[in-house]
Length: 222
Length: 222
DNA sequence: AGATATTTTTAGGTTCGTCTAAAAATTGTC
DNA sequence: GACAATTTTTAGACGAACCTAAAAATATCT
Image (cartoon, rainbow over all chains, first blue to last red; front, side):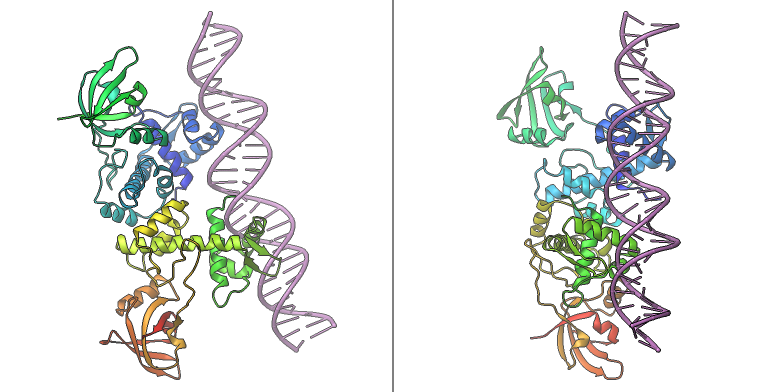
């Protein structure tokens, strides 16, 4: 059974949406917003994916991926993230330039290719935005870092990833001089708007709105 | 105006077929054989390509690429060959394993990607089968090497490319120990069947049927 | 609980890329 | 030059992936 490029994109969308908080059912409208398709179009596709046993679909009740659907989605995500590493590490693209190209490359079909690409890149564990890369068996580094704004106390953190992948946000981080791996020392938390005054790598003072802080994933520095 | 993956494949097919001998018109049946589609399907597509000014099409008379069509076809060929170099040089695929994957990769759409890939690979002039890679302006190294069987005299040649890209043929060449760049010394030409007795790199004696010799492109060794 | 608002599905239509069967044009032959 | 063979096009159909408009189911609000 073959899975079309479009079907792969639906599976990926369902996977992503179902993991936004804890694992949950996904509604037709959520998918339609995410993929910018009409809800009627989504319903059509959900029926076909259910036919193919890639999702469990009960009309009006939302959908969940089956094991098979989940495997397919994770494989696409693996490919996407590996290609992003290739584009940044080998072709020297900036981290805000690779998403659209990886959206195309993720659909290239060849297990051998992915295996060799993975080796060529040194079996990376994270993509350029800090997102974990599933291994060949679909295992994902499950420890999810928390957004900076959920840490309610001052302290020093390591910037390990982003929650938002838009060009605008990524370019903003670049422009203030923040990259994956940098240290972020929280010096003040403003109660009234939950904004943060921080120092990046000891010498670069910056101000983060709560919105920015909510999209910066950090680990506590040991 | 966007050109679909399918349209790109038709343009590439027309380009390839029109350059088999000297530049010539291509018939509906030639395309239908090459792409393994029915002639009726080809006719439909030719009408659409003509609409888009990618080909000149006169019913019953065959087709020719317009300048625009030619540019598009050459770009796809450039991408195909660059990706083949990537697969062989960087990912260590064998030369007989890369065609199908490159058929997919050739449709990835990003000028920036191709430019950077070209640089990453060291701006190669030939792909792993010895086919010339068009430059960014679509210029092709026009000096076409001749098949070994068209040289009617003994002498020493350099193996620079193949006329036939099937897995079976490429594996055959590998199995007899012949690779691009090797010297081929013609020691005998048999008149009755135009077969060749040769020596590869001074110590490897081989026998080439005319069919094999017709698919091996060589230059005279200086 | 009943009325209203929202979400989701159904019904019917479009374009792309394919097909088969039949008709038309071109080519080859005597 | 007429008839046969071959090539090509036309006509009509189908599945995939989208759409709009309308109907049905579910959720919300007093």
